[in-house]
Amino acid sequence: MGLRSILAVAALAALGAPVVAQDKPGTAPGSNPLFRERFTADPAPLVVGDTLYLYVGHDEARGKEMFTMREWLVYSTKDMRHWTDHGPIMKPTDFKWAIKDAWASQVIERDGKFYLYATVRHDDTHKGNAIGVAVSDSPTGPFVDARGSALITDEMTLPSNHPWSDIDPTIFIDDDGTPWLAWGNGNCYLAPLKPNMIELDGPIRDITPPHFEEAPWLHKRGDLYYLTYASLDRKTHKNERISYATAPSIEGPWTPRGVLTGSGRNSFTIHPGIAEFKGDWYLFLHNALLSIGDQKGAIGRRAVTVEHLQYNPDGTMRPVSQTEAGVTAPPPAN
Ligand code: FUB
Image (cartoon, rainbow, N blue to C red; front, side):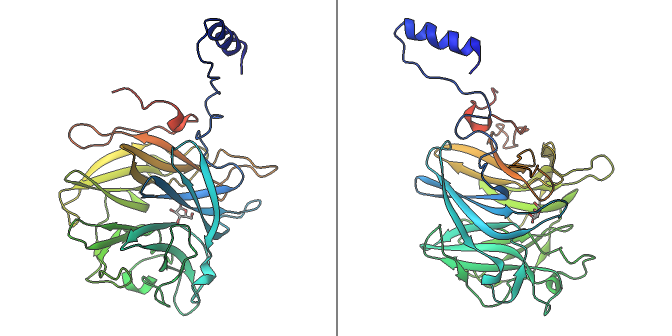
């Protein structure tokens, strides 16, 4: 605490006012980055009752390795300030057809069960990355493979020019009960699932919005559907930003709404996850500002953050900046 803060606290104490020491931005509980004992990435929130669960990938790259991700983790909070670490919930090889790459995931609840949609690397029976689905009776796992085979493989979205085109699942259940899965890198795909949550129930559509790179996130607020994603305009930017599109229905038409955030600091990737919790909206992202010991932030050593998310009266989202104070500061004034 600086001299000015000490004097302010002393003055309040002299007046008999309750003394609440103000931490510096970035050090208060709940400030960014949220978790500092491990590198974390690809945040995916899920609200269950009075608790927000946050699923993340565990970044363990050493030196100049790109991504070394061996497991998914979950944390929870009831107040957006204090977080409980529930540890690992699953690893790629828990899918017996997968070999590595615990990349982006998302969990959703249906009929008391929790379904984890996750990016992995398939074994050599299918090229490149794939998407698996696992199930649990609890949001904190353990999760087990729900199919015994991949839900999405690279061949299902041919032609694609790279083997990591089928990554980053986002799952959304529409008001009529239909689950929809969106995913992709380079192209954004959308497909309905059967009520059992583990099989496709219709053709895969290509809904790629402008500058789509990866990391789609589907949500709905009021009557409007949102497709938020990591975008990359290679002509003007080196690192991803977040952009979004809106639609009157999950099946479109999607209207591009432009950029929502700048790039994650020190990070090529940035990965959105959106939730409404106790009446407020939040945008989870990651950057690469955290250092742990001699390991500095890098493309494969990221740190999850959260910011307030606010909407304009017409439903468009107000631009968001990544800050150190995050949600420990009040939302920006209108
Ligand atoms: O974490 C590995 C990959 O980096 C994710 O799947 C992408 O969204 C990007 O964040």
